[in-house]
Image (tube, rainbow, N blue to C red; front, top):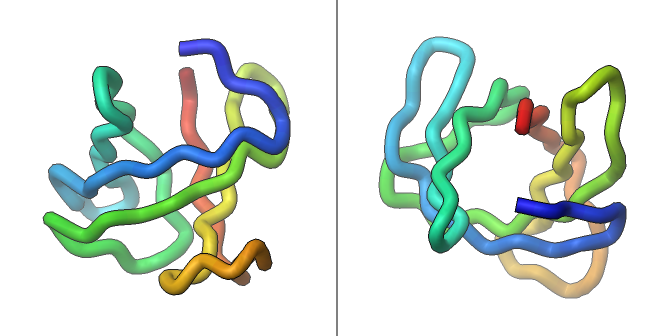
Length: 78
């Protein structure tokens, strides 16, 4: 999966663990360290904020997406 800053992805939470969650983004399922509460079956929309030390940083968008970025974020290693 090639991601670039500003990309917006829609996914569904498949599994929630203590500090991580598995999110399905279409043909890709990624395990992400989460900094916000997610629930299995929840649909999320995230924006790629950039890369830091081989980690892709994603920001969870507001549940009712209106173009603004929410306060919660998740980090994904790809």
